[in-house]
Length: 300
Image (cartoon, rainbow, N blue to C red; front, top):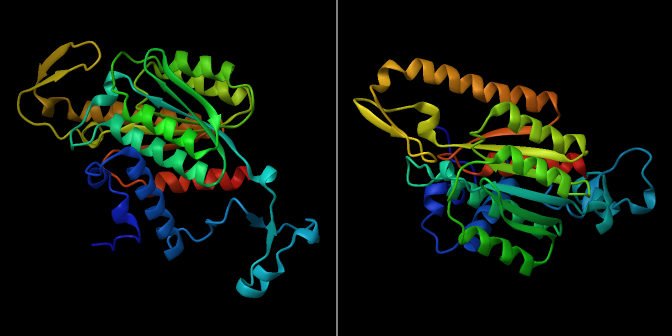
């Protein structure tokens, strides 16, 4: 059995669901994650990323930090705040399909924990972050800011939202691509269960407008593994339509179609210079936060 990574016990979704509120959850995830960074598996991510960047030949030496060189034998340039500020918008899908859960934590709850943790981390870096909650239309839109009170407003909205309607991902993506005028980072947290070609066009609309994009494709572990057996009734969470079937007769075809669905998103995102990461609701948040930090470092 592999050893638990430092700080990973603070990142388990089911354990986090027992905490009192989403602000505590976000703080626990971020502080546990940063504790893990200090202790190793992600060497190369600097926890001081809002203040320093690595020296590049040609940089003005008046900003060179000689104390860091003496102490750590590393070459860093002190950055000013205007160099490091990032402007980000987090889009969270609250359509009814996101309410699905097989393991005690729904896709929507998992997505909220992820969104809250990312927002907490960004405000900690003094970056500006906004949030959009949507189903078949935009339910809440909070413009980017970087104050602690602004973070509290976003967390309150997340905590008070429940999945409620049908999916409208593509339309929301197009609307927000037109609405977000300043170039920045767009993070999409969704199960992406809509017409795939339309969703991909919406993602490309952001790239056409020169935004950077990260996709966290949230799926329940049962959607990924299809563990059902015996005569089972399946119900569409958005239309209410029911289908009774023997899962073993369809498992191979289901797995084949799901694999094609995921590969298509991954391929087209890669070709369009969009970061894509599959987010299994049974998995801790460290890889997802690390992917954000990697993107953040490239943008910085």
